[in-house]
Length: 68
Image 1 (cartoon, one colour):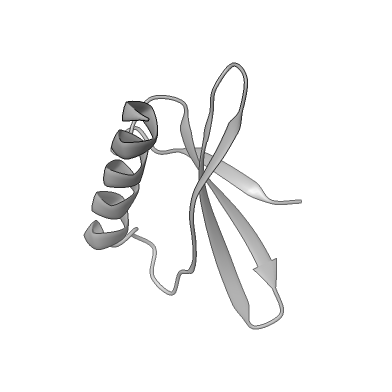
Image 2 (cartoon, one colour):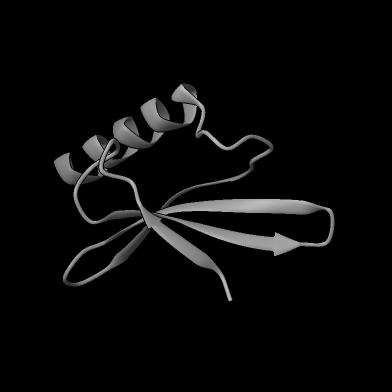
């Protein structure tokens, strides 16, 4: 089963799912809204911390999604 943790640095209702697949550990950043689940980013994570560039990209994508 994937493991999940909240990602308040990105925004409310945002979570990071952790999925192990062979030699890789994938991270899926998503936000759960009342009518949709928005997949914001998927990447292979090699350290314990989420890179600042990923956090900034996710914030920007959600900002553009909310504006549309």
